[in-house]
Image (cartoon, rainbow, N blue to C red; front, side):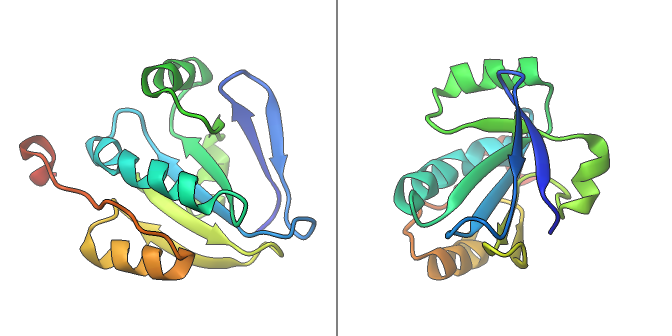
Length: 145
């Protein structure tokens, strides 16, 4: 995977490079308007708390920097949130939201998990990352999506 240039909700740019760090990177692709992303949020927050130091966590949103700043304030995140250009979305395996992409420290894509952390995906993520997550209970609004 080539280096990724992202824009933080503060407007600052960040380059995520591979080959220099000692830990793998977990990209979490989401949208502030995605119902499944909202339901999956407790999983990503639990993952962020448990995986800190073992993985570099990068939350990437399908949103403008201003919308992302509002979303960050609403949810009181304690990790950085980024946006990405439309051209980069396909290049980095970001399809529908939510999607999680695990990349080795050398830049090799190891796993791609599409969708919310429902039972089968949840078990694979927990086993792969050595974490325990709360899972997702679909609400009536998202069950039909």
